[in-house]
Image (cartoon, rainbow, N blue to C red; front, side, top):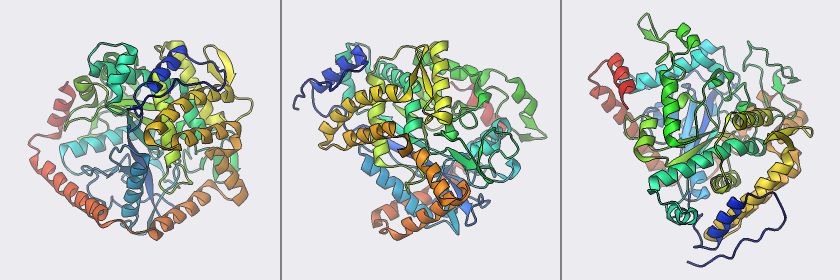
Length: 536
């Protein structure tokens, strides 16, 4: 392995001395130590009919079982597809697999389209939004009841919002080198978990930048929340919008919903994180008790507690570990520590046929490594409040020239703080490029600098500009793009024989696995739930 020289800063910025020391130590050590992190994508898309209305048709059997398929499942609604890639070391492999899933799925949708935006298409009243169905097994029933509970708690409209989740883990050979740099003698699992939690805390601090750079939902169809007064201006008779908005999906009308404001999950340590999640799952919530749990023999929700299960806790980032069959997420974390992080704040990019591109993935990867290397103090009530304010305010007003972020009790411009972060991220990108043998990561960071310098070049501003130029509603514009994306996937080269065979075999395998699960149940659903919630 060849050595890298110490990093030379090109300009003076308010750098963390700890970050720069750690980055320089990595730069002067073995090359390639930051390259090859594993990246996976989970991308949601609503199915709709050719007129743009939410599909009422069941999940296509030709796509496999939504319960057991590794690549194509559903989220809240039967009409909300979720495409899942394996984790790859290169962004190109990840994107190619995601595109292949799209191509396979499009060929099996009978006169249906995939919606291309995070904010939904023309959707019906809550009661007519179909819940995802996973068969008759106990685990399948639990998944549906959980979603029924979400509908009662937050409304089904909110659950039709879609996004892109980016899963990331640093390369395995990074950890022993980094532990030596930090001088930590604990076992690697504990060290890795603490470092990932530091990353998570910093993502909470700096995640407003992701909303600014990649937010693509400044407008939405008025069928969303049609029974509510959202206090937003109208772009057209069918479209609500925020003039300087970036990501309405991540604002308080979407996944920063105020219903969860009383849930406080600590990020101080993995034990505290697990403790607080489990506490929320055991703490009754009066408003949810009014809904009821099992009424006239039918479950309305899994429990009347603040959280039904761990995944109900909405956060822009989650620490994760792959769970074993039947294992709860917190039990998996307690067993082996944090294995990777899941970034949940990426909007679907309406301009990309797959909803995301390599430059986005490359930047997010470098940004996450920056969040890990940067000093990460614990979050107290004041700093947590600043994080929440910065996220929600950026989501609604991030491109406003008068907009200010809260930073350690003072106000700062978004551009000044963003450029400081981007300077540091550029150093990370250079080291990844050294391992990859190119300049793609550095180029991605340069592109993001351009978006900070020119807010009108951001995806959110570009979408509003396109709506204005086309003189049409958000729905009409997104529907036309959806048709274009369908035609694109129909026009490109056919899937390779091996990939086609892989997807067909997975669809068949998943259906057989669901049948096996359903045939193997030996206890009632009531007993299954009791056992599930009593397990540690």
